[in-house]
Amino acid sequence: GENVEQHPSTLSVQEGDSAVIKCTYSDSASNYFPWYKQELGKGPQLIIDIRSNVGEKKDQRIAVTLNKTAKHFSLHITETQPEDSAVYFCAASKIGGGADGLTFGKGTHLIIQP
Amino acid sequence: DAGVIQSPRHEVTEMGQEVTLRCKPISGHNSLFWYRQTMMRGLELLIYFNNNVPIDDSGMPEDRFSAKMPNASFSTLKIQPSEPRDSAVYFCASSFERGAYNEQFFGPGTRLTVL
Image (tube, rainbow over all chains, first blue to last red; front, side, top):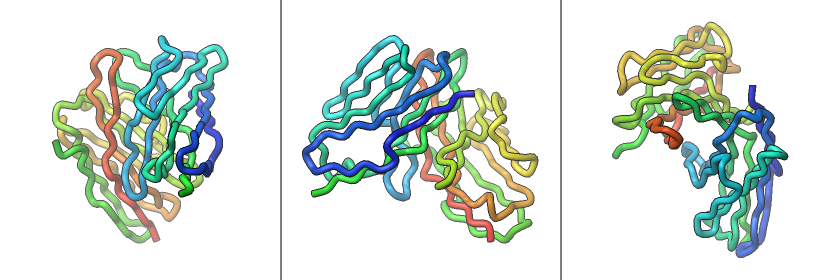
């Protein structure tokens, strides 16, 4: 089955600086890579996703890159703000004839220092 | 839209008792997922349904765990008998599979403590 590794487990950055979180996956058949943000006491919420037919996707301060050859993808947050503090999870799955369950990384606790 | 609804939000029970967690997916969604979150193992997929039919239950830890989806608007995850190592936050998520788009929307979770 799929295995997703995520690094780092904790990341502390100064407000206004950029943050980068990296993930690798093992199953070359995976073709859908979402990123979720989880705030304390809440369920994960999708912030951005990328499919295998593109190499990069941006949405305001958030961007995700994908390297299918190396089987790794990354989340980039620029101009970090205090509200970006949360746990971020990467995930991978295959989109086939029906919805597929997600395999998650272990998460990155992002701390934005004022 | 009320989002995915889970109940109860918190459950404290004693070892050996039966526990039932409930989920109401977003109206119109045709896929439902149960995940478990612990510090040690992170977020793990337990089982998922498509059009009320279980598709993959390989993540269910053992026979003490069972899940049902009697209709499109309700699902249960049952643990019988419960054990302390079952303590975790259990999330339900739903999605509407339409071609290549299948964002999963998560509920607020049920925090289960087994004493």
